[in-house]
Length: 239
Image (tube, rainbow, N blue to C red; front, side, top):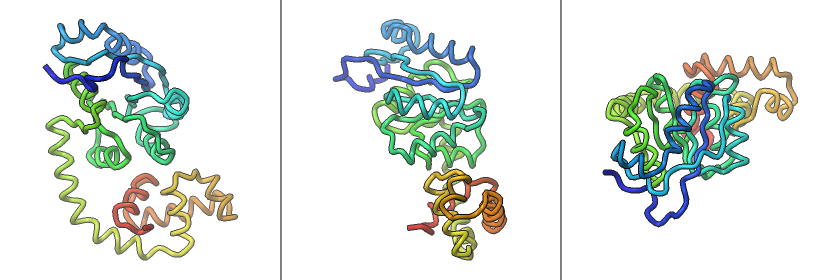
């Protein structure tokens, strides 16, 4: 039987759920709000005072707003949500220095997205085909201030970290070939600015910003602005 996330706590952990599938959120809410004694007896996991669902969201944008308003102890974010993905929501919340612990839920996850999730502050990642026992154990672990990944995901992450060491030198060389304007745009991307905000700050059109981003993607081999920002952070380009 696992240890309670906070043996001294006398209140339920406050949780926010973000997933674009209503039935999945409903099922998850019912699972999490079962009495702690039932969770312990049925699943063999000690969740202490249990969980209280304090907010729900169906898009990444809604998730960011709910987390800002409710300040839950833990947020469960679907990786694939409309308009703003779980990764993009993580990035926005990281910029706001939220104290909420973040976990990603995913039907499947690409290796590069796994690394990004960890780099953007996700404390745990659970696949949607996991058992309830595993989900409860992961939540208890994350609420205790630790990281949690399944064995397969740990292996994937170790492989990625090893590969990253080999790729960093090449990426750094390409990043340092950016023009001064491209570096200015990159700094704003890393800071979490949207294209419209970048255009206004740099006194250029949004089309010009998109042009700069496309050139940077081609130079460093990034497929999106999130990967570009991660590369810049990893190489220390903007330090």
